[in-house]
Image (cartoon, rainbow over all chains, first blue to last red; front, side):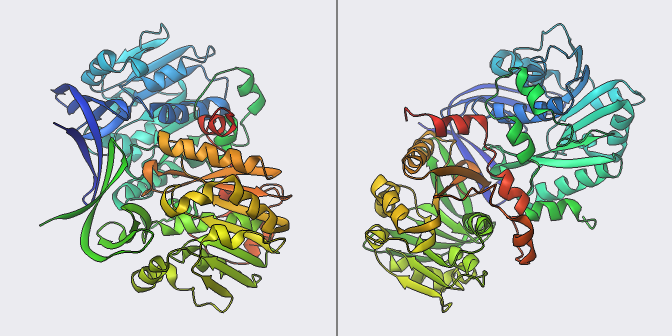
Length: 284
Length: 284
């Protein structure tokens, strides 16, 4: 017998992983959560049938969602993480001794429960004393907050289901207000390649660009996401991810990473021409 | 009825594209050549059941295999292209008026025949008067040649079947000898992500590094290749792809590209830490 997990990456493209065992399957009030053990990627967490995290490539995503902002401002002390139920983003953040407080707001406790049980590789630092875990709607959590966080990371699913509100102008404005003077917003910014992802990528960037004086996007290779070409957004009130990067200082910390380094920090902001054009296109 | 093309990217990973029509299928003395019309990617050329080119993403591959070398040395006049039967590499090269001669050596005439018929998007410049088409073994073609080409592009399949010899020390040494003083070698350098590709990536780079004083690798996002994370090698006798890049001069040519630009030229050489370590690992 063979068991395969197949994701419809578009109506006309499928990506399949051979499965050893279906380890977990439960439906919360928000979404369907599953964990599989796969031959190629190790453990795989899916939400509503879409790949969120695999053991084999989670380091790419979590390196790039945290270290770019941190290396731009090593004085970051208070962090808000929205989503990120698997715990990988928090794991990377806890490597910085300088960080004093991490508020993590995940709408769906089931994602955290499943990750703690089946993905200790990512969920291993959720009990760090600096971490405060809130099972709430990130949208409401950030509303009305002012000048509190040095960094907000929006580690969301696609803009469907519970993740939808995290792609709105209202939410990005609330994030702006919740950030300190040197605050940075990092957001999951979709992908340029397949048309549906590309539309969301452009829309999210456009909204953020209208709120933050500095708004850029950077790319990384994520093999288990559709097309493997994925972006994060970097927005801030005054810090520039290239000009304010202090390579020497970050490297002096001795944080060992498998994907991120201070060269790829810069390189990742160099986008293909078609992606730049999509991000600048005002008609989308 | 639904028709799907499925590639086994590893024993445990499959990538599938929905097919409108199977347009062409023929076996040469070297390999099986097929052309499909797909919903997502337009026309698709496969060799021995592996994706070579699709209409949707060929621009990424062909931009990156040609313009990085050209922008490093705009005095390139004589070019040798090995493989590249679909014609896309030659198409990009013919955009440079400064190039005087392009020798293209493809072992399998059937690939060119099929591409001319079904992939005019890539094969459209094979009749440029500067192009000399040889249906020969590239390995033998380059043997004994000295100080002739300013640029050699090895646009090969994976190192199995007819492409195998194009990954040997003997071949890379012959390329070195065939190059002029400022000569550049660009080679299809596989991928770091899945272990089989990664081994070939490291091996090819190691061999080239032992022959050329300058040997680097640069990456690009190729959605229809396994993992989407793919590399080219850049080797040369004296030119450095970053230091010798003349951004202004290349941009003054007005060559419009969809993926390549002089920022991504530099950014593409910034590799993830695990890739750098694999390329430097002497034990592989």
